[in-house]
Length: 308
Ligand code: HSE
Image 1: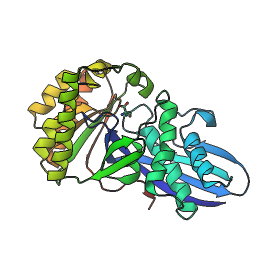
Image 2: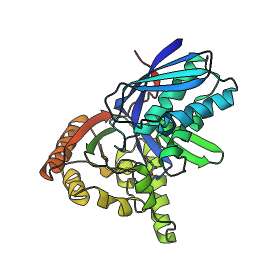
Image 3: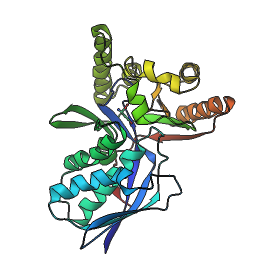
Image 4: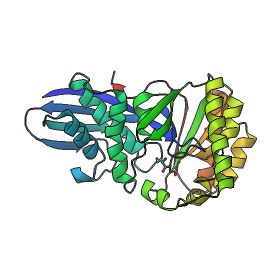
């Protein structure tokens, strides 16, 4: 069996205002997996990560992603996946995206790169479809595969733009030990929004893209305001508004829900502030009797890659 070991990073989707259209890499954590191919047929997934995952192969996000890849490749084969370490599912930092992205990235490497990264994003989105109630969003898989910050300008056809990341862009993420599934978080979304809300939201998305492009981190921070998804989702996260007040007071530029939650994400101008903000997040959840994992990172330009 020919095999390869790959790493795919965590990612933060939405970046506040960019529901389903913005995402960035969070390279501090990720999925590590070994993927092998051989002649024959079938898909075998072995989970050695210690993180609970669906027992059936069909329920794993890796399966539809690999199936989409092989259907386009046009030659069936036997695929074996060994998951060595894994971002906790339901964390809101792109756990499913890291798995499906790592799997298709590995296959592409093993087969001599028949597909572009953009095409791999399409395959990996099939995994997102499985866990989102049928909607294939790209705002985790695109940064996971492409690195940095990515704007998905359109879905039909998929049109993705990798944006520059201003120097000093640091983030803190806290993943509280509570369960919020992407499906559940999408079900509470409004079906329609008033034009006045849309105006504020697209103003902010424009501000976010402009801030990243101009390297204006203050503009990035004040644009990360979400009046569409966050009002419906914040009740899933205990003390969300109190925590935001605290971290903004202590120097963070913005704080939002990371993807569909329950993780929260804050942007800071420098590493020292990001570390302090992460401590505040940890203390906040501990005070409420909730364990949490916290991470700080600068935004890496690197996406999925062959493991060193
Ligand atoms: N954009 C998606 C959502 C990301 O907010 O539902 C899910 O991780």
